[in-house]
Length: 537
Image (cartoon, rainbow, N blue to C red; front, side, top):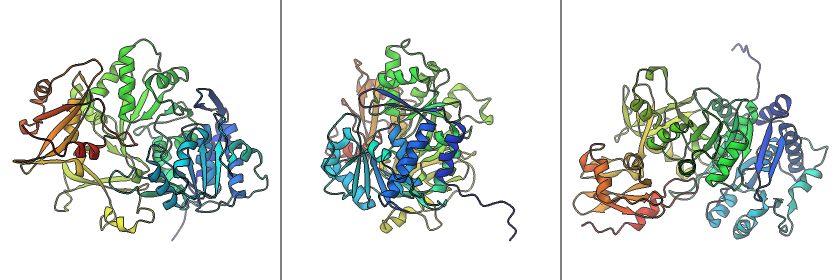
């Protein structure tokens, strides 16, 4: 075989070195728990992350060793994102919103050796430390809390890092990070990412038809850094030289809008819950904040209602709808309008923008029917399967989960989706959330998105409830907007003509809040448990 190109390893250290070399004055802006704002340049970040990497090597961290973080979004977490893989270790972000027992299980299952933790999260650490046996704990002091016995302070670790510690040579297939699923369908499952995975994923984030991130952007990662690597933004931003704004634990709408205004944010990323709260704040005080024209807001985690996309357009802010999973690192698809849509009506364009969109380069999608067949042409529908350059090939130390992959190597997502003639994807439901009424399927997601388009509805979730005649019927759980009053009859009337008549729920229950997972998705298992004994009239 004739090789015409040189071998170049796609590793995180290449991303890291590029930032200091080409964007030394670009900032990482962090709002700490105290609300103090700290500014560090990429030149500062480079020196500090290098020191942490040397310190970890000095502690005995080597190739493949797991180092956990229990931290909010801020400068030190960005430093850990790079220092751990630079030392040869595996960055393992722990989800602070999980139950302490689940956090302990995850840390023990991953065999994490070292923990880096914010001092404001030490009370949480105390609840699971007996399960996870860390060899060393490093505390990022921000509020002056006393250190646990045997722990060391983060700044001291950086100051005392050995100058002569040798960082290992890295290879693109080396593991550099891992995340666990949130465990809504059983125990959390670990996914390990290679250096190559992160490098390719980071480049995809910069593509114009994906998220279009560049050195001209200021990006606000509202999505937690413990949630699938903050959707890859801390890696892509460093690679591309984008300014980063980190909100810390201050995720209320007013705090986020203040940051967007003062730091001139051009792109932000978060789950629909965040954007719905921001939309309500804007509607309440439409002239309070001076935001950047065309501010892009990436929405993932769950579907963005078309009504929300339309509402933000009226404020000059653009929703970018994306889809992914822990198993896809996570960016799988992005919904943008292609050249074939130029002659479409506004209604058609909004409907398309509310879908999950087109797969990234090097990501492939297919749908499989109930009998396991894959339709070949035109519009297709069925369970969504995915494969590609940053899609997991297995779960960490869970061989019993091998059935999540098809015999020919595609990952079975558990989503039910349609693909149109251009391969654009629209998720219609999760397989476990579909409602089978009288032998026919009803999409809970479609009903939810329509209901959330009603002007008096804040949120809506739809679940299947056992029915004596139809086996299952949809029950809608609705949270009205603050101060609003809406009736079952009004909402059923609103659905008429928008869906088949037999889809319309006979029952609608009004509640104050819909339970959610740690990723901000509706926790439908809790709703199904609550309404399992529902009595139909």
